[in-house]
Structure formats: C-alpha cells, structure tokens
Length: 352
Ligand SMILES: NC(=O)c1ccc[n+]([C@@H]2O[C@H](COP(=O)([O-])OP(=O)(O)OC[C@H]3O[C@@H](n4cnc5c(N)ncnc54)[C@H](O)[C@@H]3O)[C@@H](O)[C@H]2O)c1
Image (tube, rainbow, N blue to C red; front, side, top):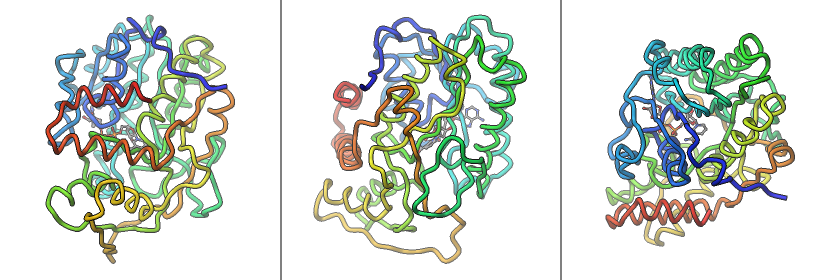
C-alpha cells in the first residue's frame, strides 16, 4: 500500500516554512498553498536571481517574512501560532561551505538551535521537521553501501558536517526539552540530491546544464563518475508532508530520523544524468568533462536506504530518474519560452 499526501489534512493548517525563498522551500510553499494551508515563510531574500520564489509570485500568495534564522528574538516572534514547522533555512551548498565555513556553521547549527529554542514556548505546535541531508552520514566511500538511518553521523566538508551537527542538535532538543516527542513530534528528514524546475543555484548539476544551454556553450562536468541519489523534488517533499501528517497523529512513534531517497536501488552517476538531460532536451546539446585538479573534496559515492519510510510511513518515491529529468527539462524549456510557470508548476504537482 502507498500513502498519498492528504489534501484534507492540510486545509487551513497553520504552517511555518523556514527557507521558503529557496528552491525546495518555494516548491513546498506553493504546494501547501494549493492545498489550502495557511503558510508563513521565514527566510532571507531569495538566494538566486532569477528565483523560483519570484517566478511563482509567492509573495502575494503566502505571508512572507524576511528574517535571519540566526536572530533568536526574531525567530521567536515569527514561530508564534504555527501548528507545523518545516525547517529548510540553510546555507545549502557544499562548495560555498568551503568558502564560507563560519556562515555555514552558524546558519545551519545555531539556526537549528534558535528554532528549537523558539518552539519550546509554543502552545499551538504539533510537529517540527528539520530538513537535513543524505550528506549527514559518515561517508565510507563504498559504492555498495546505502546508508540507513542508524548509521553514524559524519560529514567531511563544512556543509555536510554542519548538517550532521544539526541532526545531533535535534536529537538533544527532542530528548532534553520535548520529552522525546511525547506531545510535539520532532523528526529529521534526509533526502537525496534533488532536481526539478526552479533551481538556479551555482555549482549544482541541472542549473549548470541550463546555464550552458542559455549561453550556447558546452555543459562542463567536473565529477562525471560521482554517484548520487538523484530524485525529483516532489518525491522528498511528499515524504516530508506524509511524515508531518504522521507526527501529528502519533508524535512519539515518528519522532526520529527518516531517509527519503529515490526509486532506484542504485544511485546514478553525474554523467548518466547529464546524458539523459541532453537526450531529452535536444540532440544538439553537448557536454565536456573538465576535471579541476585543485577541486575541493566531494564524496564519490552516496546512496540512501529508504526502506524505513516505505514500510512505516507507507511513503514511496514515484518518479524514476528519467521521469525526474523529463519533468525538469519540461519546466526549464517553459521558463526559456516565457510560458506561465505558476500553471506549469501546478500541473506538475497535480500529475505527481
Ligand atoms: N537541493 C538539494 O539537493 C538538497 C538535498 C538535500 C537537502 N537539502 C536541504 O534542503 C533545504 C533547502 O535546500 P534548497 O536547495 O532549497 O536551498 P536554497 O539555497 O535554494 O534555499 C535556502 C533557503 O534558506 C534561506 N536562508 C539561508 N540562510 C539563511 C539565514 N541565515 N536566515 C534565514 N534564512 C536563510 C534562504 O533565504 C533560502 O530561502 C536545505 O536545508 C538543504 O540543506 C537540499
């Protein structure tokens, strides 16, 4: 059996999303708004220009608060009244974390501490989901390993490491101040490498491909044989939503860490994803492998085992990697053709 996101559950729910101006936060805000939830977003300005947040016209659809997650008083003010919180605000890029480790650590760790501090005083709250990452696990660089939730935390680069710390902070707050989730459900969600329309971040594969096409240049690939659990953004988001529904019904039972990986057992290499992207876009699109000898360390192999979410939450990833890339190509083509992106995004969510 497979569970679907319940539209009825979300209608009129008061939801706070931190990081709502980012790639995943914009998708989540839009989806929840379409289901009739009362959404408040808390974040800095959109991290990219163009941004999905602006293209979806989200400012006019939800209550959008500009605020820094490192500012405890401000966070306290804006969590008031929320029933469910999705915490996505983060410095979310591996390479940027090498350039700005202090900002990465303060945003990703102190930001998490601030959110939980603010939540301690909330009476209306039922569930909090801290969105971390597949990169929080101690990576043993073995292609045969698919990480389960019980694996130790780790993280080589400051981004991955800060997210592992954010996991530990969540666990401590859950046990120390929330009675292990007795009344307010507290979970973490670890998803794979997400693709989908609306991502314009630097040093991410699909946005780099789209920029190559826009500039009529070959797509440059840095690490062709790195494997990642690629998935369409709607797959993990449906997992977060189903997890939140379960936390509200039975907080203690679901207050733990959850993997939301892709459909395939094996993750795909970068080169496989790029080949699919080029095939689906246009045969004329070309790519070139250009390794950077001074490149920073990035993990070579990363796979997630999501059987726990499939068994206990009845969540299942729906779109295989080819479908994920096809939906992504469809979205960026519409973007380049200046089509109605609110309509297309809504259609993609409905088709999901
Ligand atoms: N995109 C992926 O492939 C992926 C994979 C796994 C996990 N994640 C996690 O999902 C979450 C969202 O990722 P994304 O791809 O949408 O990232 P993004 O960079 O597009 O968005 C980040 C959001 O955080 C906000 N933010 C950053 N610093 C802030 C601060 N100091 N105070 C308040 N807000 C701040 C930004 O304004 C933005 O809204 C992150 O926690 C990320 O680590 C992403």
